[in-house]
Amino acid sequence: MRINLPKDKHIIWTKHVLSKMVQYQLSGQRLIRLLRRPERQQSGIAPNTIAVMQTVGSVKHPTEIWLMYQPINQLNGIDVKKIRIITAWRYPGVSSLDQEIPIPKGIINELNI
Image (cartoon, rainbow, N blue to C red; front, side, top):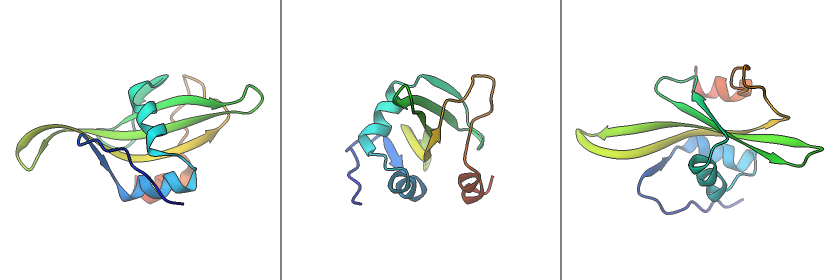
């Protein structure tokens, strides 16, 4: 599968998220839409990260798309406004608001958290 990333100078795509986009069949445009209009937002499990979510799928088979990113205000001593997208995944079903972020164990192991 070839990944077409949207051209945006404010977004840094990690190699990790690129592999997860292939694994979970997520497009760059889909992740940008999630980033701009999340249904839910909370602190990510990695330091200085934010996790956002949108519900997708059907009424019978709902799933959630999650994305974890890190805001960057300085890069090499220069003030910038960028976002580093760290990872993304699909969660089967719907997580509750009082539940911790439902991150697959494989992603946690890959991120060494």
